[in-house]
Image 1: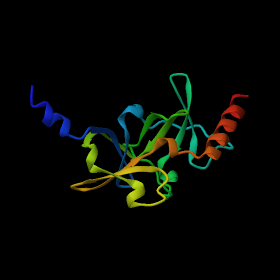
Image 2 (image 1 turned 135 degrees about the vertical axis):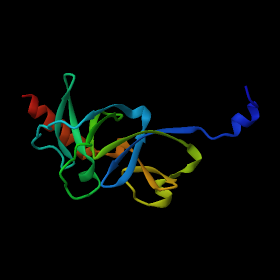
Image 3 (image 1 turned 120 degrees about the horizontal axis):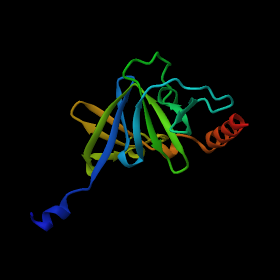
Length: 163
């Protein structure tokens, strides 16, 4: 079974879902991911915040689609065949993140993840950063993806679309 003292010394593992956009890898906590779907047509949603591309119907639920490229201030680009929708749950709602590709689940020693605020003061959407042998992994804070104003505008746009 192993030495219990040694097991207590290990840092807890961080299980993350990794995805890529514009050649950079990002991640969200695996517990916040519902599923990953191939990209589908997104229905526009007038009056929604700029980062919301529109909505998709997932098993009868209308889910807002957040364009990760827009959220990060990256230029728009045609999506390729590997584009995916990562369905996530924030504290307030379900969202679909439009990403260039889904890279899968990775597990990291939690001590290897540095606080984003310590490295990049004012990083609004990034909760942590992990240094990997082949680059950095930016771990997103999904609850910060939409500001309170974005949330209000999205709620109003969704209510308008239902009428």
